[in-house]
Length: 313
Ligand code: KDG
Image 1 (cartoon, rainbow, N blue to C red):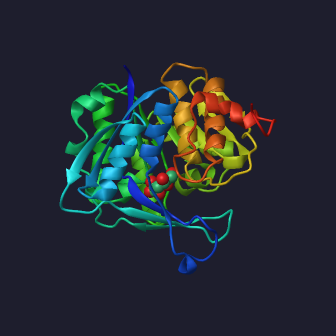
Image 2 (tube, rainbow, N blue to C red):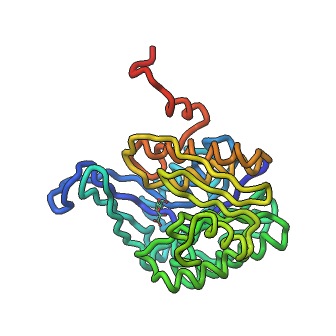
Image 3 (spheres, rainbow, N blue to C red):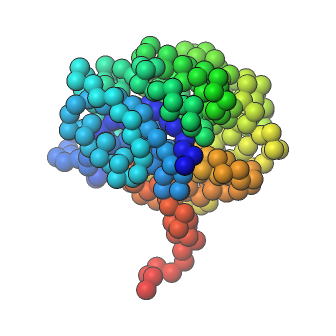
């Protein structure tokens, strides 16, 4: 069956369940996160096979990530690294509606990713390869892996998508802009928040940002605008779509859901309108639950967005 290949760093995730200062918390929720594994899980739930490659430490956190990915029917291709620990991420919740992420991932197993961790055959047989702008910020070898996989995919005529996913805790804006401009040139599809696109292109209107991203190389640019919806400028025309209004519990992971929704339709040859429709519904669903991936929808969950009866019997 056709599959989407993605790779990157997934980490243990500690999350405050009660809002307030971290200093007074005595217990935390434990799970895991990672932008690329979020996309892989969302694709799987939407009925598209996915493969996730990455490095995990030989520890309980790594074991948990493998187990959850298998439970979600993602096919993990893991390089177990006895030399480093699986990274961690702490999601503080100063108030009910806000979160603050702190990483414990310097020198982590995931950051030690190398080009050989993503095998040629997995790339060549994929329907699409998806990368993010988080991975190049992790280490020189992780950065080299992103470029290597993009180049190998293009040589095998496998389309590539990139989500800029700028993480200010990992690198400076200027360094990110310079490197992401180079990497975007190797992609066919580019996803970016308007704020992220502006890091590369300067402050401009949404339509200009999409056009500017296409000028860097990709044939399709999709701008994510969060609760303001989205705008796509592609080979099959340009189009905007409003977001589905929701009462957001946790917006982290919504961007990954959006990307997966778009890609799930794209690999099946769906129209631009259909790709955006599924993308905004997936993004909205992801906001309805706490956790980075738990709320990623199955197709039947889209109906929840329009549920008006408080009790279903
Ligand atoms: O997109 C959500 C991700 O940011 C989260 O799951 C963790 O991959 C992550 C990161 O590096 O921030």
